[in-house]
Structures are given as C-alpha cells and as structure tokens.
Length: 336
Image 1 (cartoon, rainbow, N blue to C red):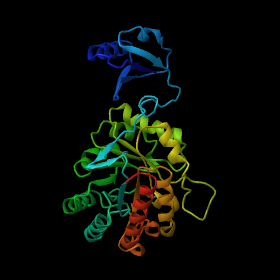
Image 2 (cartoon, rainbow, N blue to C red; image 1 turned 90 degrees about the horizontal axis):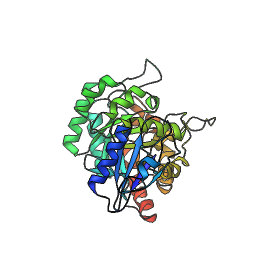
Image 3 (tube, rainbow, N blue to C red; image 1 turned 135 degrees about the vertical axis):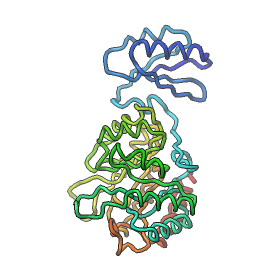
Image 4 (cartoon, rainbow, N blue to C red; image 1 turned 180 degrees about the vertical axis):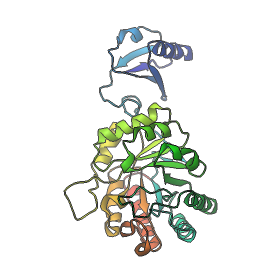
C-alpha cells in the first residue's frame, strides 16, 4: 500500500504517518515528488485497514499496490530514478554507454581497450575480474590483479569501473576498486548476494537471468532496494529460446514494458543478446529506439585472441560507428 500526502503537508504530518507505519510493524519508504510526498508501506502481505491512515492529518488518500514488487514500482514513484555511476547519470534524457572487454586478460589489453572506448565516447568501463563460466576449464578471470588493472585504467581515462561480483564474500575487495557492482544473469536470483549488495553504497547493475520473466527480474531488484540501496539499473541481456542462429534472443519488448512498470533505469546488452558482433549494432539501435536508457557493449582490440566472448566483441573502430549511430537515434527520438 502507498499513502499519498496532501500538497503542502507539513514535515511533522509526514513524520507522524511514518511513526504510525513503523508502530504497525511495517517499513516506511518515502518518495518526495515536486508537489507531494508518497509513503510506501513495506512488509508482509497481511490485510491493512487503510482508514487507519486516511484519517490522519495531511493524508490525501491511500492506494493498494497490486504488483508483488513495491519499491521498484511506478505506483510508488512515478518519476524516473536517476542513478549516478561516478559522474555519469543513467535514467535521464541522456543515453549512457558502458563499454570494454568481457574479461580483464592482462594490463596492455585492458588499458588499450579503455583508451579506445573512452575516445569513442563511452562513459564507463566494463571488465570482468571474476568470471562465472559454464566450463570449469575456461578462463575464470585474474581476480584482484584484474581489479587493480581496472583501477589503473580509471586513473588514466577517468572512466568509472563496472565489474561483476559473484559472491557476498567478494564485496569488501571489489568495493575497494569498483564504481558499480554488476550482478550477472546467472546470479539474478542469488538472494543472499542481492541482499549483500543491497547493503552496499555502490550502485548495482542487475542483469536479467537467461530464463527469467520480467516480474522475476523486478522482484530481484526489490531485494536490493528493500535492503536500502536504491541505486539499481536493470539490464536486458537476452533470454534463452529455441532459436539457434543467435546466442540468445534479445527481448526488445522488455524495454518499453519495464519502463512502464518501474522507475529504475533500464539498459540493453546487445553483445550477449545476439552473441555475434555483426548483429550487435543494429540490435543496440533498436534498443535505443525502444526506450533503453543506455547500452553495455563488449569491445576488444583483438577479438580473435580474446579469452572470453571474442565472437560478440566489437573492434574499437566498429564501436565508434555504434556510438555515432546511437547518438543519431537518440536525437531523433528526443534524447541526447
């Protein structure tokens, strides 16, 4: 349930409602709009007597939230959330672009990639130091050495670093180096990990699981917000279907649907969505046209030598082309 305060409700009236909510055993979540304050009641699903709150001073009305997700819902907050990664904003009128190699393989590879994507117009750097792989014999990442290389790249380029966290125990280490924590598709429903990053102060990039519904994605985001971290960006990265010509099937439908359901920023990962570099740019452009707030793109200076995901990685010069076309589409639809 949400409680909508009257325009001009005083701070004391808001505080009294919050105290009553907490007395009743719920958690109050405040959303301050330009004209009025909305207070969400977060807790179990037991029946609530709405009249208890509607008779309080300063309250305009209460509304029952029918969706199972509360904090991420537009019922609670109708305006778009802005999530900052370093000094880069996601969720506003601009299109944010995160780019870099799938994995940090060595210092020269990562630094070359970082400078290339920076020059092309990327606003944040991606790179995996810890890699969840389908095979135990595949490259698993450089660990802390990879994090140190990412930090050096940030120092040289000024790009904030986005990197994956796989276990709750990794949070203290990764937090020393990263500007944003990525929850990969395989960990979208790792609830202990979600709760752990929910207690972090770092923003979180939450990728949709390869067989997850949109409701399941939003419920995973709910776990993070319920722990206090409201800085979450959702990522559509393709789902598993019967199609064999591409690695996954990019769910373009998910972008406008998610934007209608949640105030959180939503970005697209076309690299994993298609799995073939020559399809990445057209799918990326389709995503921007469909309402994505940004892109995350795999870029590698020598894709044929990449230790992971070389087949879906763009060469730097092809990434330049993608960025130029992205800006053209964004301008056409009234974004920047």
